[in-house]
Image (cartoon, rainbow, N blue to C red; front, side):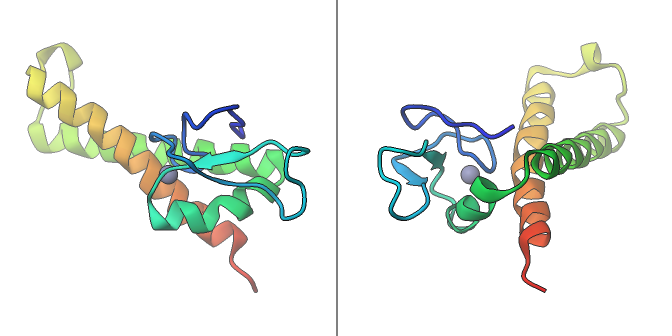
Length: 119
Ligand SMILES: [Zn+2]
């Protein structure tokens, strides 16, 4: 789901903290919401593509990126040999969550890049 916060809150691509950078179509100042972005150069370059992406395509892309993140987090648990989350140490739990967060952003950037690549 596209996020149009009034102020920069979440990046419209990776959901990390947004800064003051955003995208709106040229010539629409004040008449269009702003898609806020983080400082990751790839997110900045993907802002236009996300802004114009069909909602169904965006939702499907987000769902796939979330699945990717889950697979990466599962692989982390496999490396630990722990499958009961209550057995994770505090550090392992933080690593598990960070894996999901970072993997989601990485995979959104990858999948959106592929989805909007010119053919
Ligand atoms: Zn971002």
